Length: 193
Image (cartoon, rainbow, N blue to C red; front, side):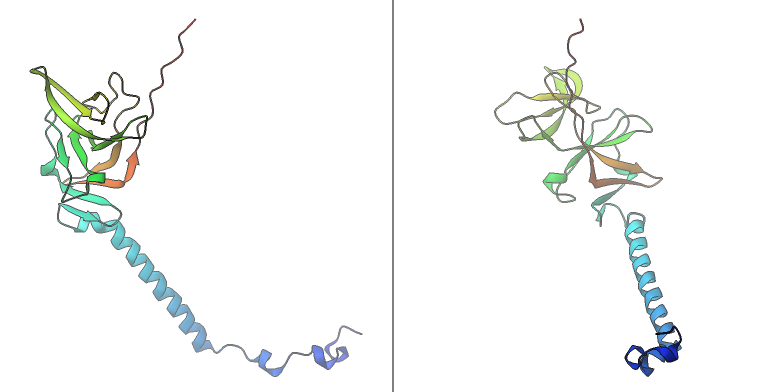
């Protein structure tokens, strides 16, 4: 058998339908359909990303992002403000606090202890009728767990309060409820020799 097409047996020959290319109009239609679908996907992603800038606060937008007005921000040194139902469910409730002129945090309204118990977090202005600023977590069957106003663990607390990701712009505060920043566990160092 040679390598020329005349030398090949007829059963190896391609039929006449293999020589018929796809018409050009079908190729253009296919490219047009794919371009249109790509633009639809791009528009959907853009609308999803821009949603916090398009809605009027307060609003919960796709992606579990809560949009609030900057007027909702407490002043520096003021008591934190709790946000819960009806804006967000109890599992996503949080305390919004302004620690400094440039630092805004959202502490989760629930805290989990070492045994896995979920404990509600509350804010306290006084202790024994003396002014003091701190958070407490009340777990059933145990003592109150204390945290300072920055959410850091106090005596007896294995870890601090969890936070949500917060961003502040000129006229709005966006709390991303799908981005929980879990506080690391505080482990005592071994005694030095």
